[in-house]
Image (cartoon, rainbow, N blue to C red; front, side, top):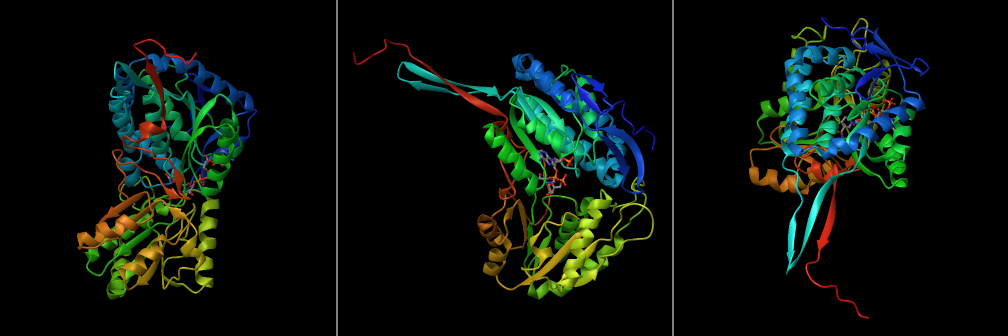
Length: 485
Ligand code: NDP
């Protein structure tokens, strides 16, 4: 590791690092070894107040810049991130345990994509003109004001940028709270935005546990909250935001189906199932963890999968040859192991994995269950770890019904060479992101978000602008005003 992991201070407020030792201790652990790589403090209520006040002060001048000016700063930040990709990726690997092979291509870079994309869109924001005879109406697209972003621990840089980029493009300012498990990279995003020319206070980071997030959501000065997290947290945050009539975006959990028909390319389907379950050690909200394989190819699929899993290389995540990292924390590993035990106890067939490799750190083997029934715990609940459940099915109608039989609706995938069937099937899937003959591709150009319990609103794509701005309607009368008396 070439770079220091201990940041200058825990928080980034009003353009500068800020420390307050009186906040609760927040140690940062490298999941591959269990060693402490930084010691931070949670924000006190006074610091949260200071961050919101800074964002509030900065907002009018930020919104008064032209979109081109705001966009230029965001695009410059994207360039800086790309230039420092290796350093940022190593930090992300230390923070999350994800292999460098992944973080080099999927974390800081996808944050940079968001800053570049919304930086480009900033100059295009506009309202509309509606002619009403001689009178006319115009609409102004205005920012919401001070916004709050709250992140999960699986994609810390990406989540910070996916929220900050559209928010800032629209003229809002933001206070961002990373997950306490992975607090380091959002500080880098804040630092880089300042280096790119963002005025102090436009993007602030405060650390802390859930109560810091709750304090931010409760604050009357905040106009919008965007959360990436679990459904239980989403419920609390949505309820609290509702009492203040705040806008929300909720990016929550999933239990997504990946449906593989007999006529699919077996090799591609196996590749997709691997990506959909084991990338980032399975810690991805949109993962296709319920893999439905049509009866005719199920055994062939399982055989090929077992063969391909021999290519898993666990080891030092900073070694670019490593392709499978540890779980993010001891706690998450315990949760996942609990689900694996339950799967075995409820009668699912453990095809591979399920154990802990030797050594330090929070490792767990990639795990595949077959003969899973829809009513088993591992078939219903989000595991958020490297555990794939394989189910059989015979007909399209049956697959559809079972794929949709979940409270979640984040993502879904279908593999078939029959494209008419693929489109027909996707048309009836209850999921915000669907893939045909691939899985988990989420470029910034594509709207992303969940149906049902998986969320509210969309991130990314042009539609994100609707979620980070509001319209003001202005009616302009050109003639006399008529009145009844
Ligand atoms: P959590 O829901 O536990 O936490 C999410 C964030 O919310 C954390 O920063 C957490 O702080 C904070 N928080 C906790 N309680 C409150 C509260 N009452 N008010 C405000 N903020 C609060 O999720 P995880 O971090 O464990 O992440 C995993 C979950 O995230 C999975 O369910 C996964 O599916 C989902 N996810 C969804 C994605 C999507 O885009 N749809 C993408 C990635 C993950 P702290 O960590 O300090 O407790």
